[in-house]
Amino acid sequence: MAITIVMLIFIVVLLLTAWYMWHRRNGYFMIYDVGSDPRLGKILKITAIALFVESILGIILLFLNNKYLNLITIALGSLTILIFSLLINQKNE
Image (cartoon, rainbow, N blue to C red; front, side, top):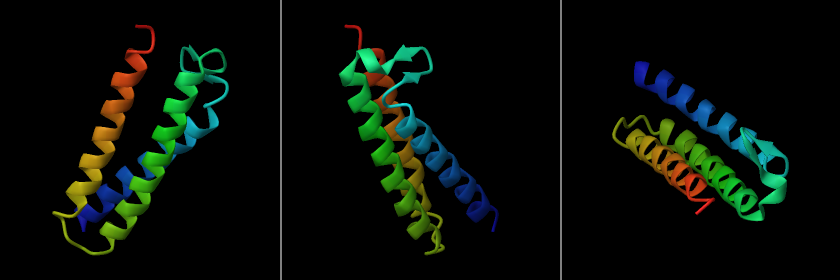
């Protein structure tokens, strides 16, 4: 039961992150001006879509009540944010 609650919180955080990235894809994202860099806007849009799809997959896996399948959601979400972080840090190179 505790794993289900924690996974539900994780999925909500993924959805909120996807929503934030989707709404900031044309304006300012933290300290970056997305409007002046179309590559950064594309990265935000792709990451937001990926996080949304992973959240939907996470909800489906959550109802299967298998704690090992929930690791897929954690791994995918973490890898997506890792790749996004690496791409956003390479934007000025």
